[in-house]
Image (cartoon, rainbow, N blue to C red):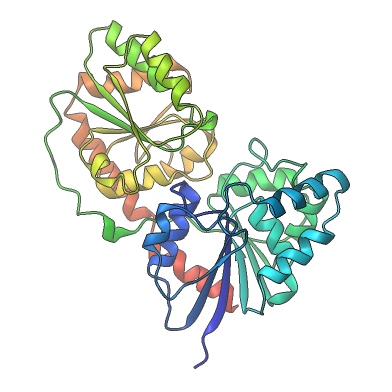
Length: 372
């Protein structure tokens, strides 16, 4: 039987939520029946090592930090709004035909996908974020071109129903919509076993140190805990442009002994496993991969109340949902510190959450969409 040819288009394979989700999706893909190609705008990232050797990689811009040609194409588009030269380049870099093409993220992966939609009978695209609050830069991908690109897709896939509703508020047209939850690679996790809490509670947060993750809230919460006589160790796993600024804030608030910046870690699972609480302080998330990873490890989750948190945590069944202000987050953390026995109860809730999100179901639904 001839294999179906599938092309995925993605920015990089760094350790963001969408990248981890794609790596997990491909980790146990059906390579018996599918021939997979991955086109990367920049062929970089620690998750490249986890990819199956059968996956063919197309490096669109030769993994240069600021490739001249990419800057030239961006400049031309920003000045003219014309896709002509970019289309020629992308069609040359991604040759051939496929049974299905999948842009795995909004923004540039979708834009480049739009240039080659005629190369496959099935065209699918993924939406991972709230485009009302965190949309594409119109200078790089105009709204009219976004609309045209989405209309050219056979299917549009969302990581949560919340994100689907947000999308519908912006793009007023009918398409075949599907919600497929992000998955984690179960093989990376040992079965969660009850473990005694740390003498000094460890509270971990994982993600890029950027504004939307709102890790500055962690530092102010640490200050509140310290001023009220509580002991805790906050661990921030990740890197990003705000790291220096937040490190300085920790010094100014005299909590540099409470907040540890651990940098980017390829596999933060052992750190998460050794923690007592997983804390998510984001202003917005399309679907929190960190929460699902915490579920898999049986760790209690505290999350701010961005819209998708209610879907991922099932309205508080699988974890605690806090308001976004510092005092509310502080009260949620304090709740666990005052009653350590609750950690076991919420660990059980996390295990229920992991069972709720079936990775097998996600893959089977995707195969059906490709073949349908």
